Every structure is written in C-alpha cells, then in structure tokens.
Amino acid sequence: MDNQLFDYSPIVEREPIHWPDGARVAFYVGLNVEHYQVDRPSTSIFPDTRALAPDPLNYGWRDYGPRVGIWRLIESLDRHRVRASVMLNSDVAERYPQIIRAGRERNWVWAAHGRNNSILQADMTPEEERAYLTEVIGTIEKATGRRPRGWLGPALTETFRTPELLAELGLRYVLDWANDDQPYRLNVPGMLSVPYSIEVNDIQLFVGKSLSGPDFVRIVKDQLDQLHADAATSGRVMSLVLHPFVINQPFRHRYVDEALEYVVNHPGVWVTTSDEIAEHYAARTE
Image (cartoon, rainbow, N blue to C red):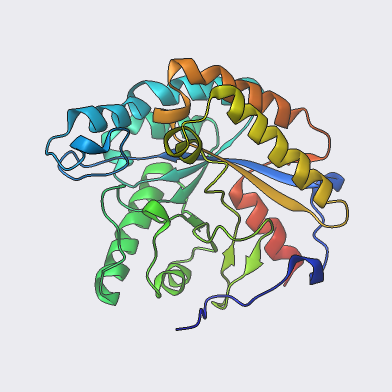
C-alpha cells in the first residue's frame, strides 16, 4: 500500500523556517531512559547469548545505564546547561524514580517511549493499542507532573493507527520517522513529525559500527557544520541521540562532553528541546 501518513515534500520547495534569535540550527539531546525485561531479548552487545533467559551479559550491559551511566551524563548536561528531551519508558517511573526526580529538578521534557523497550505495539489490535497508549501516557504524566507532548516508539515502531490514537490522547508530535531535517505536518490533524536521528545515535555508531570516541566527536561536528551551512535560508534540526549504557561507559564519556562543548559554543545554534521545536514550528505554520 502507499504511505498515507505524510506527503512527499522536497525541502527546497518549502516556506523558510526561522528559529528564535536568528539561529540556523535547533539542537536537542534525545536522552533515552529505558527499562528492559530480564526474560526477553533486546539490544545486545553480544548476540550469541541474547536468546537466553536470563541473559546476564546483555541485560547487565543495558542495566549500566540507569545504575551508573546516566548520573555521569547528568554531570555533563548540567555543565553545558543542556536540558534533556527524555525518551521515557513509563516503567522507569516505578523502577528508577530517582531518575525522574533528577529530571524534574532540571526541568527536562518527557516524550513517551512506550512501557518498556521489551514490548512493541506493532501487533496490537486498535483496542489493545489505545489502552496501552493511555496507560503509558497517564503513568508518565503522573510521575513527571507533565503530560507528554511527543512520542517515540520502542525501536521506533508504530502501527498504522498510532499517530491518530496519540492525537486523541493530546500528543502533538512523533519522532519515529527519521526522514527529514525539518519538522513537518502529518496527515493527522494536529500532529507533526520532528526529526530524530538513527545515525547520529550512539547505539548505531558504537555498537552497530564499532566506531571510536574520536570518530563520534568528528561525526557530531560534521553533522552540525553541514546542517548549519544548509540552513542559510531555512532552519534545520539536529538531534543527538544518547543511551547512557553506551555513551557513558567510562572510556567513552569524555567524547560526549567534547561533542557538547562544540555544539553549545557553535554560532547560530538554538540549544532547546524537542517540545519547544514542535511548539515553535506549529505556531508559525498554522
């Protein structure tokens, strides 16, 4: 079937986007804060054991994120005065409330990211998915004090009904469709797509491609420099997607710090959140 969620729109034929204070690039950190079930396979560093239950090797690797990695990352975000845009599994509210508390103290924004990263809604019936989304969003709202405005599916998954159901629940954007450098309107009233990178993403770079820390810094710099050049006449969006069990391993941590140092001191960059990008774009394209 043909895609009906959005229309083809070449970037060279759009009305210019103007970010606040004349910035060329709107930048946000997409911080994935996730929970994984111990008896289901998921993102793995050593695939040979991923089908085992339990799988101490891979589960333990992922569990480093909420136990250690995120606290190291928080120090860097605070130092560079970056508010995180958190892709939040609702199970985190019960399992790791200290992280929620730290984020509320820093005025992070929260995008719903499913119940956990072990359950995908791809095969749910409409009734099952509506109940699932309602529970996830309600749990996050109760824990954070803020109803999510955005959605990122676990493993960037959706059904054909997901954006419409999210709109019914009051959300305003999705991050699953990594096909653009600018926000755009979906063919669902009130819903946007906001750019989210699957390549400038620590899992893809370090786990998928086995790149080094200096490679990571170079990629972040190149991404920003090219987007800044592209945005001479119309603004662009850059996301930096981070998972604390990957980027905040001790031997890698210094490189995310170097990358953030470059971004926040780069001219023409609006350091912001995914919520604010969506809100700014929506207000100026109605």
